[in-house]
Every structure is written in structure tokens, then in C-alpha cells.
Amino acid sequence: MAYLNENYSKLKAGYLFPEIARRVKAFTEAHPDAAGRVIRCGIGDVTEPLPAACREALHNAVDELGHRDTFRGYGPEQGYDFLRQAIAQHDFRDRGLDLADDEIFVSDGSKCDCGNILDIFGPGNRVAITDPVYPVYVDTNVMVGNTGEADETGAYSGVVYLPCTAENGFVPAIPEEPVDLIYLCYPNNPTGAVATREQLAAWVDYARKHHAIILFDAAYEAYVRTPGIPHSIYEIDGARECAIEFRSFSKNGGFTGLRCAFTVVPKSLHGQTRGGESKPLYPLWLRNHTTKFNGVSYPVQRAAEAIYSPEGRQEVDALVDFYMENARILREAVSGAGLRVYGGIDAPYLWVRGPEGVPSWTMFDFLLREANIVITPGSGFGAAGEGYFRISAFNSRERAIEAAGRLAALDFTKAG
Ligand code: MLT
Image: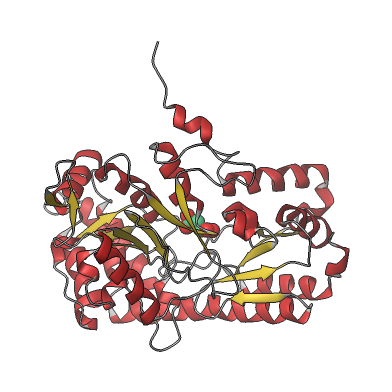
């Protein structure tokens, strides 16, 4: 008999987005007339075509694979030099940030990296996680046994939750107690909030004081429009000593289907052995990546490289502007309907406070039934998200306008 990982039995329901898809499917099966009217503003999945620069790079790379002279088999697990160099140069060194090409690890997604990174940390780390939060951080910690059981609100024992509320601008206060791993995501999913330089500096100071590691998810950095808001944790002095950063091409280049991302692991990061010895984390991640992964396909890496070409950059800027115009349209509609809206300025997500006393899943059902709009219930991101819902601005303009019109026309007092 094979023993199974019993930590999985601690997980709540299904993963959030498949659960939403399941409920939407049940609704459309029960109401076939409404099926064609459903507008999906739930999962943050891009809708607009890939930039032409990326498509051209893909075509060329596929052609190269069609000739004996330029054919390639296995690539380097950590990514081809051409892409690591382009990333390190354009995203970091051109912005005055000190980072070597080989501190970039190219992967097929930040979701996988955020989960796999736990392999290089030992058991017993005290983990701090914001609430609400991208559920992957919590669930992967449950899977590896870093938590106890969940209570009735879904909060796991053993986790230090960092409440993100309207009062603190959705940027958590520094904990009183020491922790070992800290998950931060800015621009934030789900609240759309951003963290200032001073706020991130306070986290870097805290992490260095306690020899903790910050796991910084910057998947939405391309959406930062407000001057002075950091795009990377490495803009903060000392972050090279305490932070790993996750980045993705999903939301800037529209690679959610193509799959390409990267993780930055500076060589200056250290962890501690049980015997109290300080050791670099870099060789562990290198070993992990080279053992468990065979790299992103060559054409996809060429497509990612094209994002950094002058044409690619222009196209990505236009894509980001496009989604942010959707965010503006939706934001105006929802606040016009009398609800308090956060986010949507430096991030493609709107975080909406529902009417007093209406639970998030009730709001989900109400919006699906009355407006045929799919949102993400705030409570799916954690107990502190209860009473909120998230609207994704990733949509065609036509659908964003249609959704805005339906939302503006709704009587939210009937939601309860
Ligand atoms: C979301 O909707 O929160 C994201 O699309 C999920 C993801 O990026 O994996």
C-alpha cells in the first residue's frame, strides 16, 4: 500500500478558479438561454491577441527547428542565455538594479515557481501570508505540511496571517513576531493595491533583521502607472540579501496560454541549516530547477525575448493600456452603482466592497443570476476578503463595456 500525503486532506474545497468554473457550468446548464450572455470577469486571463513581435519570433523559431543546421533539442533548464540576458538587462540593469544574467531562472509559470520554491526551504518555517491572498501561496504551504488544520473561516493554524484591509490600504503591518518566509504580491492580486517604496523598505528591514526571506510576486509590475511605485523588490536597498522575485510574461505579453515566466534568485541570499550554519540558497534552486525541469520550449523563449524588442515593448504598453482602460470603464460603472471600489489604477483588478452583510459567494450568485457576470468572490482569497468581490479587467472592450452597463443598471440592495 502506498501512503499518501495527508496534508492534502487539510485543503478546503477545490482550487478557487476550477470551483468558479464548476459553478458557472452548473448555472449555464440550468439556464441555457443565459449561457451566451455570460461575461467572464473572474479569472485574470488575457483576451487580446499575442503581440505581432512575439508571433513573428515564434514563427522564425519554429522554422529554425525545421532545419538540421538550426535544429535544437533540450535547452538549458534555467533558460537560454539570450532570454536571461534580455531580462536582466532590460528589466533590471537598465533600471539601475544590480543583477547577473544567471540569477534569472526562466520557467513555464510563476504559479509553478511559487509552489516549487518551497522545495528549497526546510520543514518548520514560520510562514507569513497576506489575507486576502492569491490562493496558491496558502495551498502549497498546506501541501508541504507547513500548516495545521483550517478553522471554519478557512484560516490554517500555524500560518501568520497579515490582514490587508481598506484601513491599511491593503498593505499589511509588519508583524510583532519573527517569521521565516513572507509572501508579498505588489501590484496586488486580488486587491489591486500597490506598495510604496517606504512600505517595502520596512519589509526588507524586517526580513533582514530576522533573517527571513521575502517571496515577492511581481507578476503585475507592468501595470504600475503611478510614478515612484516600485516595479521590483530589488529597487529597495538590501533586498538582494532577503528576497526572491517572481515575474511572468502572462499579464504583460499575454502569455497565459503560451507559458513563460521567470524567478530571480540572487546569489547573495542565505538560509540556515539546523546546525546554525548560513548557506546560499542559489545552488539549491539551481539543483531543483535542473533536476525537475527541462526548460521552456525554444520558440516560446524567442517569443518572450521579442517582448524586449522596440516593437514588442510598444505592443506590450498598448496591451497594458488597453486592459487599464477596461479597468477604468468598469471602475466608473461600479462606483456609479454606489459600491466602494479599490484597485484598478496600477493593477488590472478591481476590489469591490459589496453591500453590508452580503457574503461574497451570495454576491457571486447574485451577479451570475441577475447580470450573467462572473466575478471572483473575495472570500475565495481568504477570510479578510469576505464581503468583497474581484472584477478582472482582462476582457475585450466590447465585453467590458457590456459588463459595465449591466453592473451600472443593477440594484445591489437586492443582493442580500
Ligand atoms: C487570477 O485570476 O488570480 C490569476 O489569473 C491566477 C493566475 O495568474 O494563476
